[in-house]
Length: 255
Image (cartoon, rainbow, N blue to C red):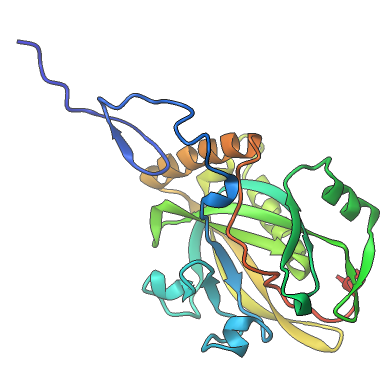
């Protein structure tokens, strides 16, 4: 009698497939990128709605889908740094309406040759909410796994405006591991730190090296990288965005 096969197929980004499940394409062909929810990690500022209208405190890290302090989801103190593994990095461009209009996003794109990206390259400015602001905001997005939270639920760390330098610092840490070390092999920490600019104080991300992903973490991160790369190629990779969640002051040219 032939031996019954009970082995499990290779790990995917969401679940381990039973050996009898065959891979198939096109089973969600009518779903749009906006129909999938990938939460973002928000760093609370003094003008963040969660602070102004809720009980959040400046400098805390929030998850924008459940609206919860991310540290509490990991059963950690809110002042502690959090371990994460960046699995996929991409750029995204947003054009926002004036906050007072309540319209939110006018347009968003991940096309580096598109109209929004070209607007950033030209440094186009507009008057918005009584200030000189860039017409389009550029974001560095890191689709990440937080091992203490879940290896099946990605969270996006999104950096814009005052956080761009921090995104570049993280990319530099990643590159220093070596040109052939994959992005998703490294583990890092993220926390909020207070910084000063001209006449105001704000909170910014701080990233530090935390070694390498463990074997099971590496497998999940590699699988997520493949899923994200394929989704990005189809223009179907989007994080959940409610509003322009990084309030800033002054002329954005200073940033």
